[in-house]
Image (cartoon, rainbow, N blue to C red; front, top):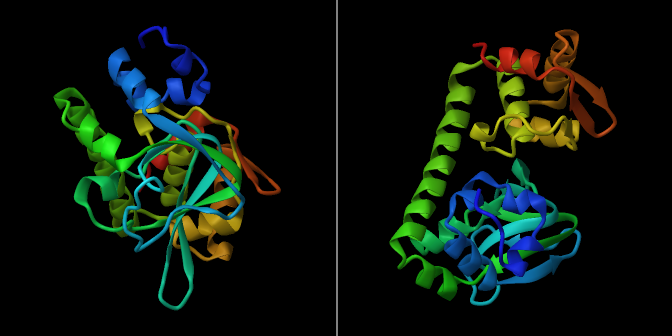
Length: 239
C-alpha cells in the first residue's frame, strides 16, 4: 500500500485504508475518491438506501462505512424480512444501482448510529471516465459476483454444517475471502445468522453446537468467537 500523504486520507479509519479494494487504488484515485465525498451520520434504523428506491441526487452514491454497522436485507411483499449480510467499517457499497441505473435491490439500514462517506452519483460518473478507476470498479463487481455465486452454490450443494462454517469465515473477513479471516469476535445474533443462512433458529443451534464441539468456535450472548481458524477453515472445506 502507498503512503498516505494527504491529510484527508491520513484521518481515515484504519479499516478504510486497509480495505483490499481501496488500498489497490493509486494514491491519486484514493485522493480523488475521498476528496469528492461527504460524511453522513445515520441514526439507528435509518436507511442508507431503500429496496425499490431510485437513485436520488445528493442522497445516494458509492459509500464506505466509517463507523458502526449496516444491515443488508430484503423484504417480501408479506412484510417478512430476510437478512442477507452486514456491512462493516471499511466496506464499500452502493455501486450496483449507480452502474446499471436501476433502483436499489436491497434495504441497507443502520444498526445503531453509523457514519459513512458518500460519493454522489454525478461525481461517481465523472470518476468512471477514468479507465483505471473503471477497471477497479469492474474488479469490485467481479468480487461481488463471485461471492453471490459461491453463496448460491452453498445452498444447492453443501450441508448445513459446512454452509454455517463458510458463512462464519465470510463474516470474519467481511465477505472478502482473499483478506483471510481477520476478526475473531463476530457480533451477530443467532436470529440474524439463521436468516442469512435460510435456516430455522433450531437448525442453526445444532450446527453451531457441532462447530463448538469441533473446537472451531465458542458462543456467547449475541456473539460468536472463532476459537480456531484452522478448525473453522477445515469445517468450511467440507461438503
